[in-house]
Image (tube, one colour):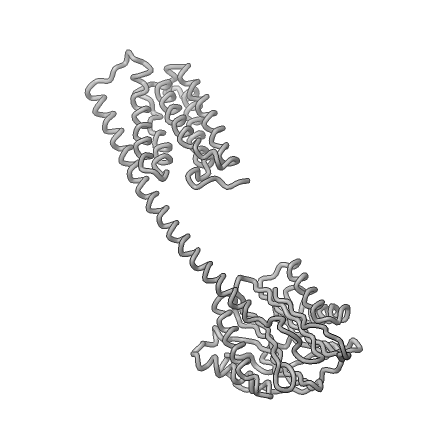
Length: 427
């Protein structure tokens, strides 16, 4: 259903209480002994007006361009109340106060002239009995009473219009601020995407790598990275606690610190520098809690890694066996034990190293099931790009509230003349 324009503001909802009260008034007039119908033709005309106003109020809901019908609709409401008042006792009618509903509605519209139209509507309702029944002219006392009634409802219209104007201004100010915030978030997301590795060429002669980062929001706390070192390649995957811009800023800081340690051969020392960087910036544990996997792969296949509380990495061997890269070390930023251990291993030709964030756990049932599912995907393709695409597709299909990030690295012999490019995917 199309959304009504702002000036219409769902006229069917606004008209419903007016039509409902007019219908109840008509029922009361024919069922309550103390009430009376003094002019049956005018009374019936008020019922027709009520039905017409109700039908017209539904038009702008389905056709937003028909917002111009709102003043026509309000004019019918005032006329309907005038007919009801005249047909149920004229000046003695108990239904005059119903005029407050269209007064409030019309006065709440944007332009100042809406106050004038609301007051004219009150005048129409008040003077209708004397116009439609010419023999009943108002006396001086009656004119004073009518003047006071018009003044009271006119004051109501002025107050409602001013309050509505202030409310609209507050909404517009909030929308403008929200627009600026969203623009800043979009720029932050663009900067974060620009920090991901790009397809600038092969990292080493025999390493193919791919990665994807799918933030739960515009900006996420996950990151992945790879870059060449003096004797091989370094790869990283981190997960900062939380989501949004704050987590993204911390992720960028950790990534930058790891990159600055590219000449350090020991992965644990690189983690130590990243932790020192967070401490130096004065980031508290509630913001800096970060799990991180960082590995170095040398040209001869030697694998060194350090794991700061991440525990979501494994090597799929060429024969299909899965070796979990386990670690009992603490995450970065806790300030509990600022030391991490470097583990040793090998990445043989045909082996595939996969690391992912805990957002992937939301795509499956439990840790062990997730490891096996990702390993099965890797067995099916053996290509890092295929692994990344499969998990990205899974993330699109399964609802999840956390960032989903994965990185895959495969070492394989490269024959002479083989010019396969670096594969990279960033969600």
